[in-house]
Length: 159
Ligand code: HEC
Image (cartoon, rainbow, N blue to C red; front, side, top):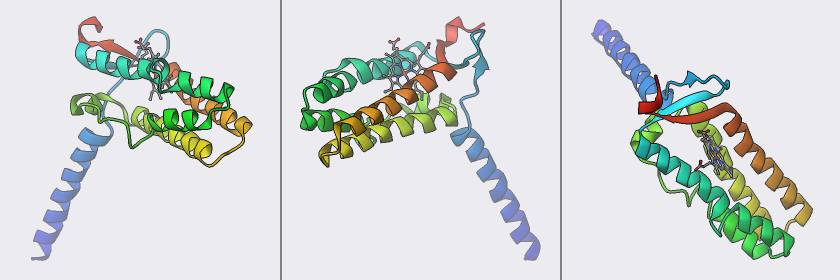
């Protein structure tokens, strides 16, 4: 009886370790010549993530609108734009992509969405414009930190 308990906990430990390995840690990366870690994706997966990235900058609801809103002292515009990129409003990425992203990458991506939420809350609560601008600078630092560390390559391009 005693032995069975040990055996079961042993099996459980192995299962948990395997799940951690496959679900949490993965996204094995290679090092590129420019020093960044390469995340290898299928072409359609890369297109998906890059479209999300351009959305951060391009669409009328995000960084562009936030910056214009700050310049115009239009805080409701800043708040709605920031909120649209917050954690709650972020659509789920396909599981196949999530599985390929390293944990540190996912964590930084979540931090970035949280930073949008923080800015939205500041704008909603009538925070000082200067404080929101400095928060915006901090948020952009997350973008550049990740860009300095990672790049995407598609499967066929990796030798
Ligand atoms: C967790 C990591 C991460 C974060 C955070 C991140 N990016 Fe990116 N982004 C990437 C990677 C990786 C690429 C692809 C770079 C490459 O392959 O050279 C990329 C590419 C881009 C591109 C190019 C898109 C294209 O079509 O080529 C834009 C624009 C962009 N990001 C904007 C942003 C902005 C703005 C933010 C912050 C609000 C941001 N990203 C935050 C990882 C990130």
